[in-house]
Figure 1: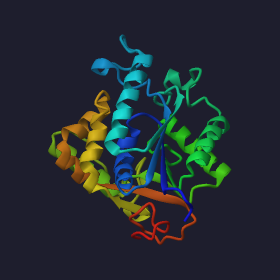
Figure 2: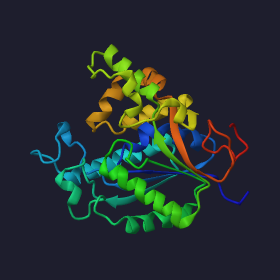
Figure 3: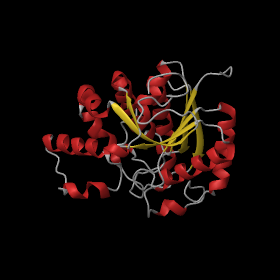
Figure 4: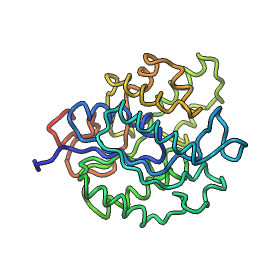
Length: 280
């Protein structure tokens, strides 16, 4: 082994993205002594302002929102015991089709090679064994998530540093369980033919997922990290579940392994399988 700590790097688009899909693994591996590096690509300025005000509505101040969200992000990192936070600082591009997509300085308009060079420098500095980001569709089509995917994969190719690369995902069975819980709570969802599940716009069939990591032990930390981002309305549903129900729904984080030099067998239950002699 080289004389440095094992290192996990998660590359996310906005403040709060780290909490839902990777909060558990960040907390779990930090507790195991792994160096955890969070790279947040944008300032989150297109998020909700006070009272839930949206971009373009009276009272929305992108600079003020970005400042608040940085404070929230730092609190989330404390909850998850993240070792190192790196901010690329690009302007939030907003949802696909918003005018912020093409605003000067937006992440979406930044040349991939330019941003990838900056991320590659961070990879050279931290020497991550494992890198986690989104799939080609940014999980659900958000331009900043797509761009985070693009620059991460370009930086991985440029440096050749990480032994393992993963994309976040969610099993279709978990989506069905979310729907059941939301219906139980009185929240209506459109019905879906089970035959259409393989065509879902995000997530994967259960048998296509390579990596299932049990993070239930860290459910409270994950919930605390999400609670740090309480200014954002999309988090209210999860926070309203309470810690116990939240952990039941969010206590396993799932990934698609897309690059590996460890030789670890699949499926696996440890991002560091094959690197640490841990579980496989």
